[in-house]
Amino acid sequence: MAKPKLCLIPAAQGDKFYSVLPSSGVGDFDFSRSGGATRINSQGLIETVASGVSRLNYPLIDGKVVGCPSHLLEPQSLNSQTNSEDLTVASSYPLGAVSISSNQAISPNGTLNADKLVESNTNARHELYSKSLSFSGTTSVSFFAKAAERRYISVFVGGDPDVGGATFDVEEGIVSLTRGGTNASIIKYSNGWYRCELTVTKVANSQVYYCLRTNGDAVNIQTYQGDGTSGMYLWGFQTEIGQSYPTSYIPTTNSAVTRSAETANNSGDASTFNDSEGVLMAEISALANDLTNRGITISDGSVNNRVTMFYTNVSNSIQVKVVVGGSNSLNSYIVIPNISLHNKFALKYKQNDFSLFVNGFELITDTSGNTFSNGTLTKLAFDRGDAAEDFYGNTKQIQYFDSALNDSDLEKLTSWVSFTDMANGQLYTIE
Image (cartoon, rainbow, N blue to C red; front, side, top):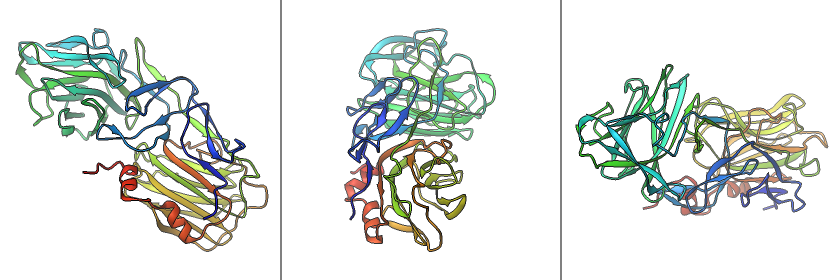
């Protein structure tokens, strides 16, 4: 197989996405984000990186780091929940028949700063509330929980299970029940911690309710006789109003915090790309199947001349386009099982010879179409070519070949090298 002309394999954090090839550095992507952000580091802990620093995010399988990191790119999002790591602040967390015991456990960031929510010794609803918030449209709520004497917690947006709610078992790591059209999930972290996540549609001014339970067989609020000592460890509360899926953790103190959108672009130059033929390969996963357009593109800085692949507004779909002088030489899309898992794509372009390979299989072919005049393609970017429809997701590798590889090489390029490699890439647990 030919050697790639440009190759990005996540290996270092900084103000660029550093490409291994070419060695001159011309293949490095300019990276931008104002303000800090968090990632999962190589020890499986949540870590904050500084403003303008890219993020190498490590995958978790059954609470452990498995495999190599990905470059993480996310959209702008706001955590409206203040004092996300301090439940003792009454203005942020009103209490109902519970008390807070502070700094009782090592949190997911490796610090002794996780609080314990303790039930009273009364027959009551034992719950904690968020501060009052102005919900609008879709809202995503997330928080970290660790079982102590209690293992079940129900969460409601607006206090009404029929509007949206879920019950989590943070000992077994399952979502036991959901109501009100809620999408809910639970992710295992190290040391017994789970991130509990739910997304609901809610338009009102109200609160998020977090209610201790003695069982997981219902979503509605439970009244029970507390013993005054039992409870659960909690940390890292996040409420993202207008966000259709939970994003990475955004720490807050006395005010809401916005993590700005991230971009990566301007890799390569006119000497990097072959206008008549080539292959763009990417191993990527989407943050969610959120029905938005998110692209990776070689272009001249416009949408009129580009080689692009992108997630689309059709569920679990990939669209590939080769646009020459404003006219489509290739324009096709396919539906795959799950864009939120890592998939390997390779898009080949050549005069009257276009194809797309996915995970070792050829899924798109087209034998009619033009390519570009010399000197047209000048840069590779995580967008659609004109700095719009930015790509948000995890990237394990990008490769560019300045010749059209044969089918055997394209199959090899997009195949998994072993069962373990496939399982880790797809975030499966091997038992």
